[in-house]
Length: 177
Ligand SMILES: [Mg+2]
Image (cartoon, rainbow, N blue to C red; front, top):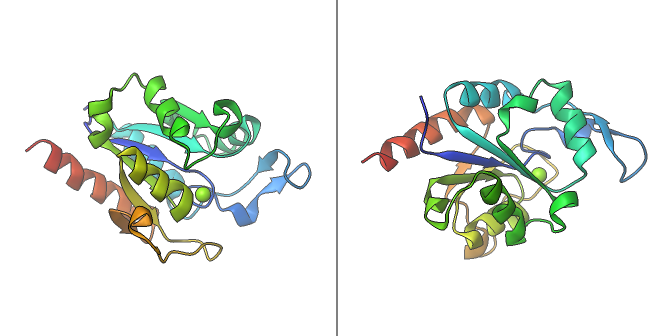
């Protein structure tokens, strides 16, 4: 079954635990890293149940290739907007625009997109300014989760990846009204 809602997701500390990254050199390519508890299972299950998923992530192409291959997640992404290739980092609208272009979406499709991320200034403020719905995942101790302005206010807050399927199902039901 094809779903109406589309998931845009950050990777670092949203899907992958940045604390477990093993790199070639500081700031270099990530060779391997572990997933957040539940993140891999949730992505696979959303993909299996017909959701379109795009990666919108800051970093190096090779890092994401390595990490997704390690966890068997290559196939779940219908699009990948990666800052190394896009030439801009979130919250720059070019990142979100690149993912939309790869999926051949139009402006009116923005309301179908949920941007998931852990970083208020990049993922949430970026998604909000671009006109997407936004969900903050507060999982990692490495980030602040208290928004200081309207621009950073997420539409939804999740405490674990396991809450994502229910949120998408809820938005899906709302979209079909
Ligand atoms: Mg992140």
